[in-house]
Image 1 (cartoon, rainbow, N blue to C red):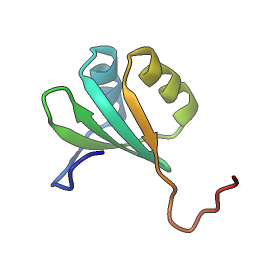
Image 2 (tube, rainbow, N blue to C red):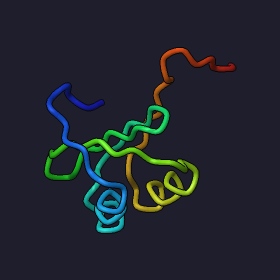
Image 3 (cartoon, rainbow, N blue to C red):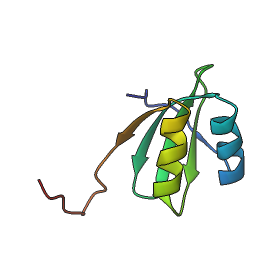
Image 4 (cartoon, helix red, strand yellow):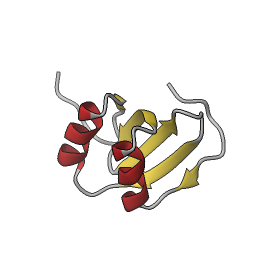
Length: 77
């Protein structure tokens, strides 16, 4: 989904501002870490505490959302 490159860390409130502003194109959620790509191609990482409200907001703003399994965790099918 997103290229492997140096990714800066962005505080959660700035991440929310980017989402609300329509600047976020796609995100990859892995546990509490969200790696995002802006519409201008810039990537950054944010640590979140409650993904449920965030996912609703992402979908409302038409952000593509992918979720990755966290190493060591189990998934049910």
